[in-house]
Structures are given as C-alpha cells and as structure tokens.
Amino acid sequence: MHVEKDFTKEMEIGAKLGAIIQNKNSRAQLIESPSEVLCEVGVESDVTIFADTADKVHLIIPTNVDAARVAAGDEAYFEELGRAALGSCYYEDLPE
Image 1: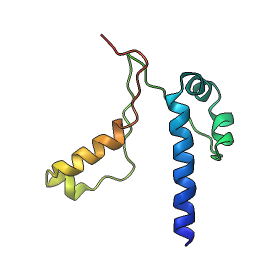
Image 2 (image 1 turned 90 degrees about the vertical axis):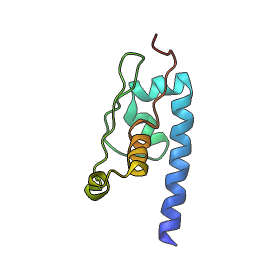
Image 3 (image 1 turned 90 degrees about the horizontal axis):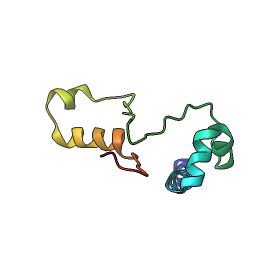
C-alpha cells in the first residue's frame, strides 16, 4: 500500500511537471526559478535545470546501466536508454 501511495504521488508530480514544461511561460519560470517552481509542485530539492535549446541538447546519462544487457547488444535496452536520455527533449524553435 505504501508503494502505491508513493507511485500515485510521483505520477501527480510528473503530470504537473509535464504541464509546466509544455507551457512556454511556465517553462521559462522553471528555468529562472527552479527551486520555487519545484516547491510549488511538491518537490523540495536542490537541483540544476539544464534546458535544451535549438543549438544544444543535454543528454541524460542514467545512474545505473545494465552492463550485461549492453554487452549482449540488447537493442530493446538501447532503445529504453535512449528514451530515458532524450525522452523529454522539447523545442519551441526547431534548428535549421
């Protein structure tokens, strides 16, 4: 039951962050004042925000990588890692 409660809270926070990221004004506020905005959605953390631009994309490297799956050339796992690393890339203006 505790796990389900935590999962529900994480989903609610994720939905709020998703809405913020998709709104131009809210996204700018998140970049300018990350601690304030994160506190408003229920995340109290000292974080650094790296916002992608048309000229720069940040690659997120997972903390844990399954070395056996990488060594085995598991393509499904590579896709999973790729989605985790680039899944939230967002562009207001696409590069030419």
